Length: 297
Image 1: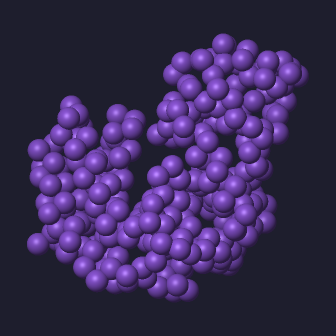
Image 2 (image 1 turned 45 degrees about the vertical axis):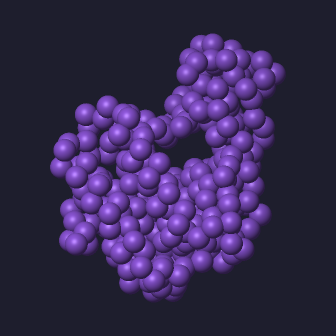
Image 3 (image 1 turned 120 degrees about the vertical axis):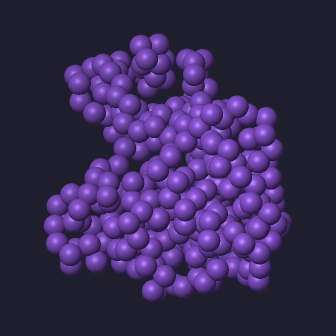
């Protein structure tokens, strides 16, 4: 940490008194920076463990900013580092606000905040991909119902060569069965790929702590073009997340078959997270597995 602090001090031309890790993601750690007097600086350092991801996130943030109606962090620059385990550092704007997970001061304010979030999501979801699908670094002309099963096959192949004690034999049986049922789950699929946030949750939204107004969206995922449901499946938790999902669907419905696919997405994205981090979110995986099982006939 001291070496990383010294390196960032040189890059910024200002001595830092300390770094504080404020968030951990599969590929990166997010640090608050404090100047020599101990005051928080107006930027954050997002340190990436994998090479190439920082540039992808910078591009994704520029796309979301250009096409959206809600603020996203400005990117100030990218630095290559030799301070293990990090390889690249993205210097981004520090935005004020608190997580949208924090309860609003009244039910009426929560309703207004929901409407603001839905409008922000729909602004991105109105941007057509013109036939492209996939991640920032590998977009291609394809159909989602072809591209996503290919992603699952890559994850499955990785699992077969990976010692993953977190997964029980029953877990692996479920994953195998879900692969077999992919054609049925995507039968008659016809939703168009659009611009997506790719890591949508209340944790990736900031609001004003006093007025409860939406301020910004942060921490996008690597997938750039996908159907709207690939953003929506992440709103799976009971309570505020589920209420937000229903609020969105009232304004912009999706196919009824999303009821099954949402749990397939959650299961396999849990696996993807485990492959990249070595940690399985057991609560999330087990809940998704339980919901998916009735659809695997």
